[in-house]
Structures are given as C-alpha cells and as structure tokens.
Image 1: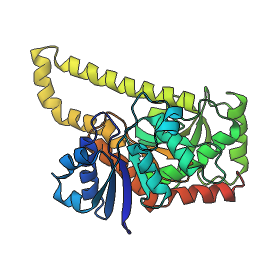
Image 2: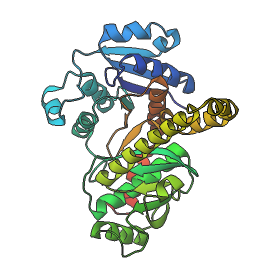
Image 3: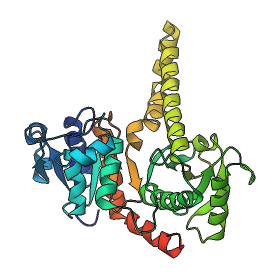
Image 4: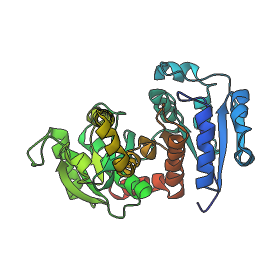
Length: 339
C-alpha cells in the first residue's frame, strides 16, 4: 500500500460482532501496515475488544451508534428507519470522505440498499452486481452477479462482463482475464435472447479482456475462464450449490476416515495432503463479496466468518481502493460507449 487508507467497519454486523470485526481488523493491520480504521457501533462493546490490541488501537477510531441493522430487517425498513445504525454511518463515511471504503458482515440486502441510496451508481452502470471469487482447478475464478439482480438484459450482462474483468485484474492480479457468459451450452444458438445479444455486443466492442463466448456450469470449477458472467438468480444458485457441495465432500471425507481403525491410521499418513486440501478450499481465503458498479467501495463479508475471513474481506476493499478499480470500470464503460 503506497498511501494510507481508511476503512470504515460496520462493527455490529455479523454473527459474532464486534469481536471478529476487531480481531479481523488487527490481522488486516499486520498485512497492510498503512491502513487505518473507523469502527461504527456500540463504543463500550467495541472498546472491550479493541483494548486487547495496542497497535490496532493506535490506528483506529470509534464512532458510537445506538442502533444496529438486524438480519431480518427488510431493506425498505432500513432506508426509512435505519439512519442511526452502524451500517448507515459506515456507508455515510465514504460519502463524506472520512473513509475510502466500507466492510460489513451484516444484512446483505440492507447494505446494498443503503449503499445505492447514498452513493448512486457509477456513471454508465445501470445496475450494480455482487462479485466474488472462489477456488478452481486452475486457481481462482470471479463470478458475478451473485444475487443483486434476479433478471438481467443484454446491456446489464455486458456491463457485468466489463466490471468482472476489472475485478479479476484488481483482486486476482490476472493480466489478461478470460471472460465467459454462463449458459446451458457452448453453442451460439443456445440460451435466451439476452445471453445471445450480450455475446454479440461483446464481440463487436473493443472488450478489455479475452471473451471466450459461452461456458457451462461444469466449466466453473474447472477454471475454464477467469470471469463467469450471469444474472443474479443463476449466480446465487450456482454459488450456494458449490458451497453445499464443498460441505458435503468435506463431510464424506471426515466420515470415511472415521469408519475403522485402519482408516484412522491411514488418516495419519494422509494428514499433510488433507491439510493442503483443507487450506486450498478454506472459505475464509475467499471471503468478501464486492458490490461492483457503485460510486464507492463496499465489501460484504459472510456473516458467519471468523477473524481471518473478515481480514480477507478487508483486503478486498484495500486492493480495490489501491489499484483504482472503480475508476478503471468507469473509464472502460466510457471508452466502450456502453453508458
């Protein structure tokens, strides 16, 4: 990190807040020495954990708030009644210039609604998208949208492709990302009108990455492309299916090694390899979904993550800020005439 960056943290969002938020910030502080934090939430609760980390306390401020967005709160309710919540004030700090980005493990719908209300979209972006990355056979792959938009037209998908390409460069450091549209087949005649039209538009413009056309569901874990583009309905189902499958396989492996005495002995010999597998598939390494297309940096952490996972989410925000991801998206959209 070249210049100091201040990150606003919704300290009360998530299953184990504010403890994991503070502990995660401390891990992020070690990874990014020039980072500063503003914690938004109940001051007495935050201070109880912050007092344990002397060096973190030196680079942190607390903004006391009296209310919290609850997991069950509807976005419309929060927009009307949530202006004194930790989430609202954290997002507001980006708008007022007190911070450069916000990270929250709280209510996803409320976080998106507050961010859209306060920041609006980047110029030329019709709808924001939720993007994240996960492990594949070739490394990591970015996928978007993961749930912000149930249905999308061709222009939305094209804009998602541009945003995903920039995100892949910024977060994964891929120099020339390959991009594919998720479809029910690779043939040009497959899919609905929006998918086919989006493919034609991308082929005709000077797309910043390498567009490979359509990809299928089994291409995602294979890592056939660096960026998978789809609507939020399909993307969210694909993501949850992948998460569920990973949990299922981990359960099968644990069950297999508990089956007999010889299996337990075999586990001792296989432990090193299994530890490598566990590390590679550890969801904490991939935590942090970026709200792309907004006029500000907002990262949504998984609500049930621990300190290490929350630190990863903070790292996503730092990289987007440091490498100018939003400006890159705006420049590409303007250059391609997609606004």
